[in-house]
Image (cartoon, rainbow, N blue to C red):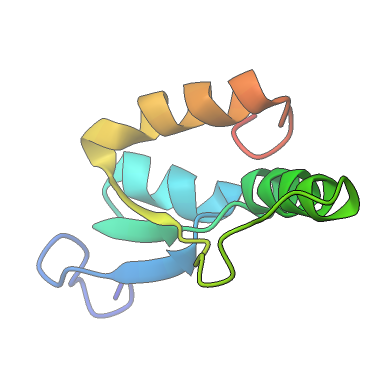
Length: 91
């Protein structure tokens, strides 16, 4: 999009919400990212595994999902990740 001078004219949405994508969303080079933080999803998987190991019932149909992050959401999403202990994605 840069080489065609289309940044800001074409809404680009990526997947994964890695640090580079969040920076691109924040700067306006991308419209949004479907943020599927490996850090956050990994914590949820470990929590579910702990429930299974403890013999507790778990929702067998649970789907782990990311969330759409647009420019205004980047600071809040980074605060969320930092609060989980992810010190690298948003640095």
